[in-house]
Image 1 (tube, helix red, strand yellow):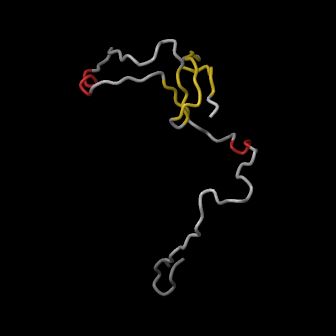
Image 2 (cartoon, rainbow, N blue to C red):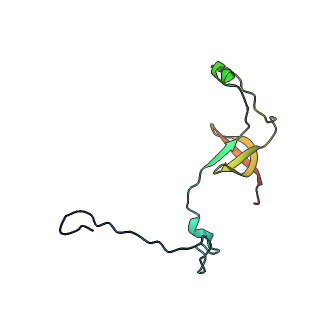
Image 3 (cartoon, one colour):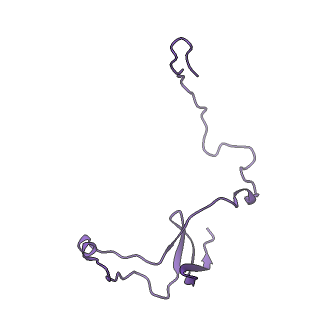
Length: 108
């Protein structure tokens, strides 16, 4: 909204109402109807292992270098959602891509 006399924007101070994060007493946003969010896209990541190396070792990497990870070949991979493990599985080939066959889903 512009001030008619100065053509400047009108600025007013907002006094927010005080509330605690769990102070709502109405109906739940989703209730039990999870169909409302079924179309929401999420991005999963798959971690097959990690390693630790010095900066010098990192600088020495070149084409053909092999980096040993901290997992056995037969160990399941972790499936992460927003950095949190939500499941585990085994690597599979899907056409010309990697895939994961889910073998375990976290319950928490």
